[in-house]
Image 1 (tube, helix red, strand yellow):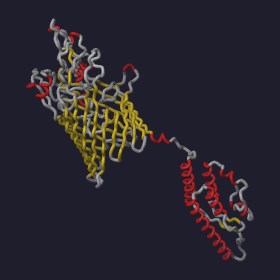
Image 2 (image 1 turned 90 degrees about the vertical axis):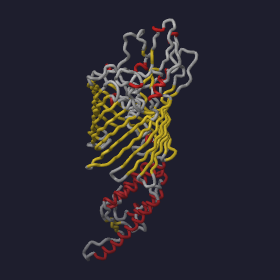
Image 3 (image 1 turned 90 degrees about the horizontal axis):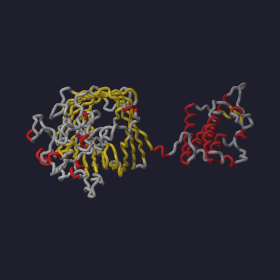
Image 4 (image 1 turned 60 degrees about the horizontal axis):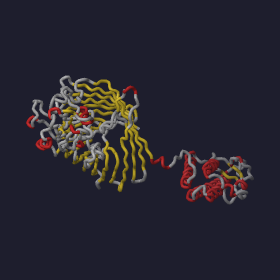
Length: 602
């Protein structure tokens, strides 16, 4: 196509479009995706630097006719076309006026414009780019509304799927005191097996499984990897699935210890949930999901996920500086086996363990540098304490005892424990009757949990102070000894006695922690340092659900922890943590743990 400045003086009417197209329908059959290129090219053609062209004076300029044609064909919307028409007509009138003034002012011997000459005004790069972008936007909007093929477009369902995950490489060392007692029974191993025979006549030598308490474990290489898929099913419904590593099915850790002959590592189903939002401020989640409560790792490990159903609300009040939140959860902890006892015709009734949790709290923004967050919760652990069985004649081939189900599905260490089995003696040889025992928790657990957080700034950096207090309102030493019928087996004060007078336990726990810097480093250069102290009495909470690093998990522990983090790049940071703890009551048991972590999330 010729540039308008190069047209001969008498070529104007033909170019102006006075003659109709021979094939008016062929243009409508052209692909719609080509309109963008066509309109952009035509627009650029009419935006050249100022030149003069001679043409017969038409009643309408070529630009006006072109714009009318584009509007009629649908390439331009009516409102954009009318705006361009007004601009073109105004510019044409200005050009004609300028031509008349130039003719009148021209010297006698100078160059005079001839009739029909048109002066094309200069259009700046900014205006030209603006017009081009407006045309492109209109065409792309029409393409989207009519379902044309668009560049870089992906299927709609992929826009509702998100992938997220994190990886942590860890170096860890555990350092034990040489003064530690070397007789710390591994009760979790006893419950996982066939029990421990407490009759010295039938088990004269063998000790129960014991925990390591004196030999350091250095230079452990460990790894955690988690990969999740989140789906926005609708405006109110979401779903998520996450896989994670782990050395075993422990609920409180997804860390995998490396080595093992370079064998492949296990992958576990870490989360699988479905949520529905009936309103902007309420949500119900069912399945296996992350911790829905505001809590510290003194009670619930950061790796702990919950089974069951939880309803949450979060509502900002009218003044915008205060919001309230809350959670109610129904969490199944364990179901008794459908076929227990496995070798008996008479099966046991259903015995299920539950956690019922309820929490309310508030966020209060005091000013631009200070905010408070607090919550109070009540957790009722149902049917988790041990029960002494009916007499069971294991010597006669009985398939277990009636309360074997009451031993914990998972435990760490620290809780007061009791023997569960009431084993009948063989009347023909009572002294030599084997008595393999399981253990269960002697206390009940109804917890009051109070959490407070204050965020402020000091010297231009963030400072976060956290506090957590827990009281087991169901703790009662008298009830524990009555329930155990004299079968309490641990948490005595080191005097050698095993009576209630020698018993040492408690139902309280507290934690304080300060974090200076950015609590969650994400951008390059973000950092923080932190320090805290924990004091957890033996029966302040079930010992199976809290942080597995402090005192290597469980209760009956006190001590401090310090740490630091630094972001090396976006979502990539290095952190270190040192914990030092010892037992609150009982024989000496102290352990220090060093962890160096390299973290990344995506």
